[in-house]
Image 1 (tube, rainbow, N blue to C red):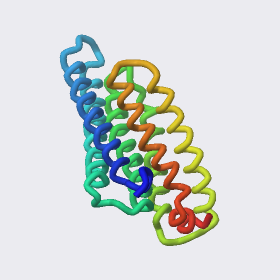
Image 2: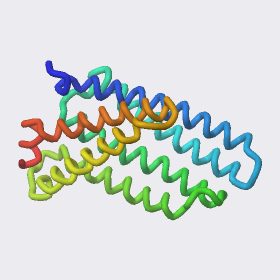
Image 3: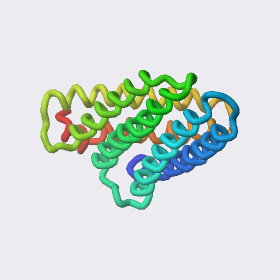
Image 4: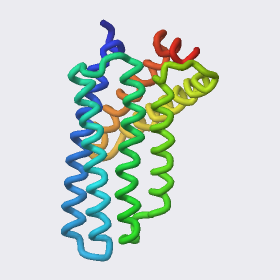
Amino acid sequence: MSFFDNTKIAGWGLFICAILTIISAIISIYNGAVKEGDDRLALVVAGIGALLAGFIYFGFGNSVRKGEISKKIDVLAQFVKTVGVATIVASLFGAIAGTWGVSISTWSNVGMIILGIIICWIAGKINDGKTTNFDRILWIILVVIFLVFFLLRLSGAFGGAWYDILYCILMAVVYLYMLIFMFDGDIRKKMGI
């Protein structure tokens, strides 16, 4: 089995990133709780949203890591769905927090909630058993998105704290997996390419 055929490696990467996200969210909640000023409650609420999003990533990463989700098309569809759900959860708490704090924008979080809903809808189209022209367009869009996010995460690995560097490297590996999955014969066939 080649490196990129082993979906468990992508699961490990996402699993470790989720743990780092959970730790970071707990630290954010603590910092918000002990901070002086108007944004105190807002930072705690936003931190809770980040914590819940971390647990969502943790659950998915753990399922892939253990082999409970192993088919590439299923990993791909579930990854996109997980990103959508985590975006909705974190942004919902961010939008609520934005009503109390001046450093958090409510409207940008509302926009992210809408984007999260669109991402979830796209995830449902990936593995719906139908091959349409939209699937072909979606394949191209996903290839571009995964490539861009791979490059962004890779570039983020060249500076910052050790936590940021490790997180960026691991997420770059996850996005590289998703990008390579897009060129898998089974996925290309199911998406009409």
